[in-house]
Length: 98
Ligand SMILES: [Zn+2]
Image (tube, rainbow, N blue to C red; front, side, top):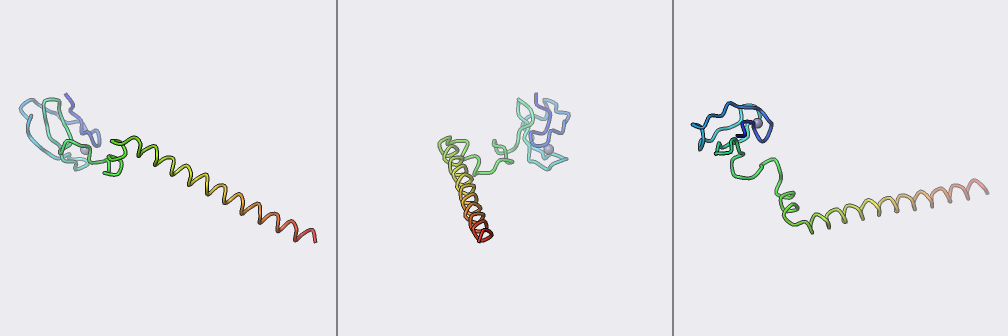
């Protein structure tokens, strides 16, 4: 039986008489329900995870495209920075040679 808060891990003394009751965590304030398996977050889902990540978790293709998007952004900005630096250094070098 899970007797700790799923959100923060605070351990509570759960007795079978409490099954079906709902409460809130005294430490983190999470809404909890007590079922046969112990303490659960109210509403069935973990409220700590935002809807954006929930959607990504349910659709792996979105997660992949999300990382591809981030990856191309990072690579793109590195290339752009490198090119700017290269052009800058070349100009400075040419100017100093003259
Ligand atoms: Zn808690």
